[in-house]
Length: 97
Length: 146
Image 1 (cartoon, each protein chain N blue to C red):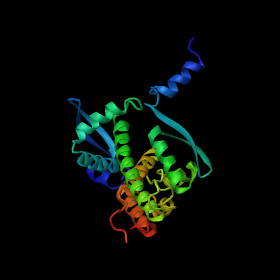
Image 2 (tube, chains in turn yellow, blue):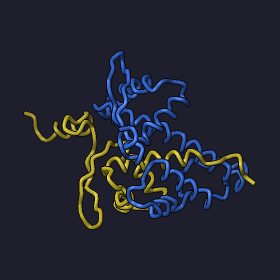
Image 3 (tube, rainbow over the protein chains, first blue to last red):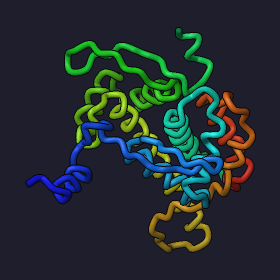
Image 4 (cartoon, rainbow over the protein chains, first blue to last red):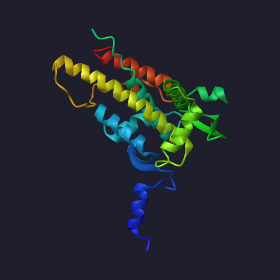
């Protein structure tokens, strides 16, 4: 019998056929709940930013998504994560003094 | 099409790639194409080779080539960011506590840089480059090392 237990194992270990392995999260933006689908490492990265910046995931996503213009929420979140890392990576090391 | 795609970093552009001997097309945000090329240059590989690596390395996470490529790019810059933050923290630790070995803690050395940067952006002005310039500006304002 294929029950809840095996479905749980699939969700955790296998690439979901429905979302291509992406993870859905419910995020509150401007007091409205919305569902955002992103890959797990992207969510992990956004949670890293939350930790470094002292923000909740809702507050972070809200701030980013409000600036998205015509872009999709997921595009805006992914792009912001990438640019955040790129700026962090650029920290000048040889200009102390 | 190329012009339209240049307006926003989050706009997507399609390019052709050869992955595993097959010609395929990939649709990515401009910021990711830019990151992809930078990433390829710094690893001394072509974007075609990197796309092939991404497909294999991220097969356990995603079945989509564009997702896999984005994850590869994000991981590349994440590693660089962590290395950079690590050396920055180590420098600080050495100054404050010579000889002491601190486990790397990625803490809030950038403060609320992110929020400040984003609040200054106008909606729709969110090209990767604009965002990066703002973050850079704010970082140098709060970063005592800069």
